[in-house]
Image (tube, rainbow over all chains, first blue to last red; front, side, top):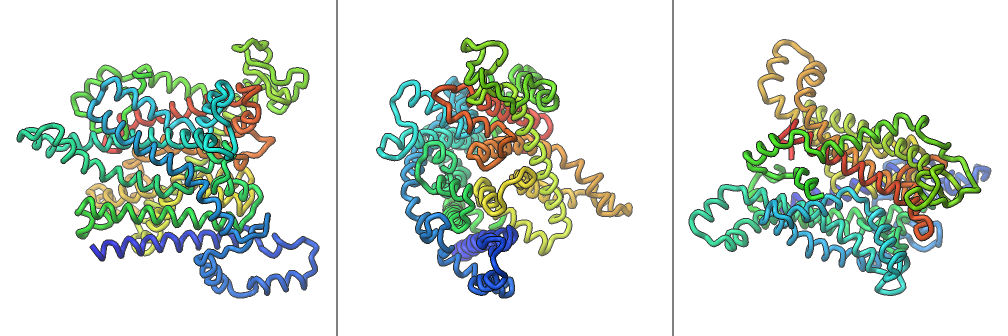
Length: 309
Length: 299
């Protein structure tokens, strides 16, 4: 078990290293920073001084090491727009994002998983078909369309809920519903197919044949086995608690990380973009790591040997 | 709508064989599938004949007919889907947007499939360090939401339509790389690849005319997944104002623009939204159907 965990941790570290490298390479490819920051007609001596000050005259690998060391300590420099450290700007937005993504996550779990299990147990019933029809919409209706339709109905037509801003808790309702409903639909579909796969296995038939009550077959044999693939998608959802609301935050003018990212991309505020990139990478990788370890705990097979199957 | 859901095979549905047979017997051409096919064909015709079909130039102002309601809501036939704040014909803009979005999705899918398949086959052929590198890249791509990577690249490089299309081509290349590598590895273990090799065929010939045709159906089915995904990604980015830039227009741009007028002129955003949903839905349905026909092993 220790070796298994160690190999997964190493892989997670590798991915983080890769994100930092990606940011560095893209940053260097995108142009000479001296030219980006200083005006075109700046005197050559000033440009030279700038390069020296920022270490741009040193060999590229030295720059890379310096960049990676700074990045991993969270230092991406200051935001171009308001001059504060980029990482500070990002971190202060995180609670706002979590304020809508965590309730949405609970809706996804609380609605999606039971609906999927129910649909699988009552296959081809009216409710199963209804669940699947709704869940198809979860795949094909983009979140901004769903968001605008909700605004059209609940803000414009009925006037029940505010359409944008973050002044009160009512402002959070539409973003949470948008995120939660779409995610629940995806999760329901996924849970249903995982359940159906397990219900078709011979050991389920064996268990019913030897007289185990159906309830116990479901709770003792089907659910734990169907949980294994479901953990992966739930893990991905946990990992995207920070990243997953980019579009929705923008529609509802919700001041979270996603909206900051969109604004920073539009203004090409590179320090902030890099800080967000790393924050998202860390949350995704940490969630993946947790999923891998949960897998090892739920399912003894990958622990022994064939870890990379 | 219920029939439609029943016809949509779910990912990883291990349909009992008899039921599957019955369904195939009864429904070789289910009506929902015909509708989906019809819609996709219509979109293709619109995209190809956009210049002829559009009643007006998509940038033409008609300031006397601003925010005209569509015909269903009492508007005149001159502007079937109404006009926007500048008096531009929504139908004409919609037609041009369909062309733009489909073009981007088409080239994006093509790039992703070509690049991923090539890398996958190369990884399986060369093994060793190259394969390890490809696997790390696949891991990286799969562990980050692609929208975030795309946003970062757009921030670093600025936006331009060529870069944007190429960027869309990086979406889900890893799916093809994974499939192509796995299938090539197993094909290399099967008799036919070894037989051709013993006959003296070079690597190009083995992969190009023997292995590739054998894995093509799986790759084509994957393309029906990538295509709608790229439409959704592109329209999401364009909606945020970070994708296709004006004066060009795409479905996402139109929704983004229409959002400003959601109280006064909801038709501006409703028309492109409906096209996005119907197109992605139709292609996904056709993809599922194709998967059942071509490749029952793929989930």
